[in-house]
Length: 421
Image 1 (spheres, helix red, strand yellow):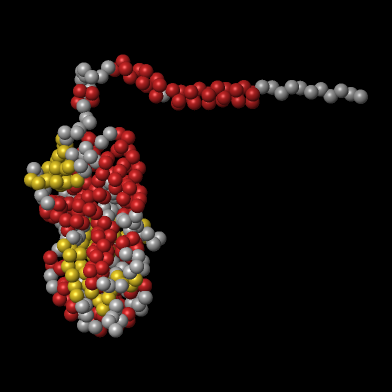
Image 2 (cartoon, rainbow, N blue to C red):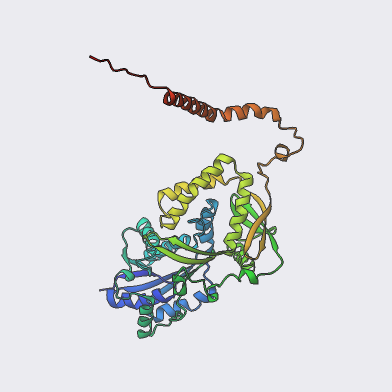
């Protein structure tokens, strides 16, 4: 009887490397690995298929998802300007659904009955992967070894790898858990587990320390169309090339470092260190362009809905109807967010300094402190009076009620005389 097939989301890291032999030995499954290339870098993908097969996988498919990742996952979040808890630009959160989708696609291709991931029971990623499986392929059985095996720590995982002679890059002294894609790289674990510790210098991979960045600022001009970036300094670039170049530019100036203790979906706080140099530059320019081109009511509604959109993405509900509905709103809202923005990079900061747009709602004639042919100061008298009318009425009522209460409290009580019988 042929073995049932399982498709494993494979990165070649510590967790997924040891999962291959574990699934074979403990579940009796034929393991097929799939790795989605979302921009984690050639060094991480080099020799990956051979490594998977050497550790027991029947096949290993590497799928180039870079363009799709940016256009279909990152750009929608960018139009919504999503930032989780004020700081995290959702690099990992956006990547997990497309990786899980690639798993489902490969499972259908080879006739697999199971899908597996290497996420722990403490993290958010288990939810992001599994909610995608449930939405796209509810018939597939899910294998989550971290919720079953007797491996309880990364040190235990290293012991298992050494016992099985599985090649790994993690060590007992440098035991960071990293996730990298085109948008960012995240760092967790090791010395970072305590918020009291400053991130060691060996954590950072994409950015130089701001104090070591160039002493001369650099200005880059970003072109946007309908809320997404399309060019750098007037040169149109494919999405993956554009983000890659901005990562390099921003990294040289120490832009995009974030150290946050965030609230995980499972209820605990965790400390994450992120580097998002290109994304930080893109978002800074977009903030300024949106303020220039978006009307007040739409802009305020975008601000109200952004935290909801960010939370939906962070908690793994990418394929939920709510996210799809919100995406339609933000796409419509950004139809006029087109133009160019100059962003100055200096010592870890990215600051928008100038912007232009054919859809600019700014009228210099209206806003000027000098003479304006389009605005009459006399018109504002009635406006201010009507605008302040509700407050004036409320203040009048409170004042009159206060006077009555004061008058009642100071009124002398009537004197009652006793009559002798």
